[in-house]
Image 1: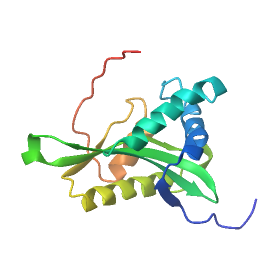
Image 2: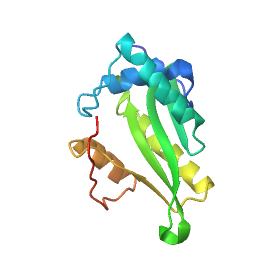
Image 3: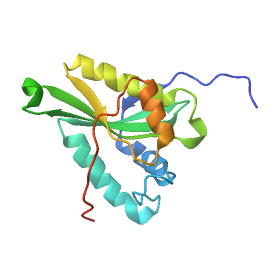
Image 4: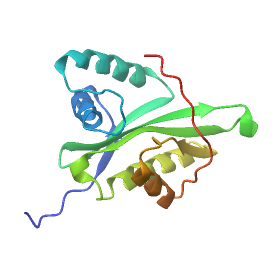
Length: 158
């Protein structure tokens, strides 16, 4: 084991070359149940999704990088509704930290980055959802100041 400290975390907009590393983060997730895989036959699907996100003016996919390796990812979406006097909200989605890097403050830095971006963009709130089975994640978000406020519902179409 080295006494050397890891380098600083860099949070940046994801690039096409990051897609395999991002996918491997999701594929390693045993709780999400999204069916993600690193199989080569699935890569075109991920590349289509990446292009769609990249082309959207209201969505951004980020990676957290340390020592030249992707150690985390998240996506933000800016949405404006008629509620709250037409206020905008930042939605955080698909937050994932590499399993061997958890507990090192990476997730907190990624969420802090989102909150600061939302402030800069004049958002009235930041919101996210978390799988009901992720109790550790719920405690993590609450430590960062998030409050449970709504129940979520979904219908699977595929």
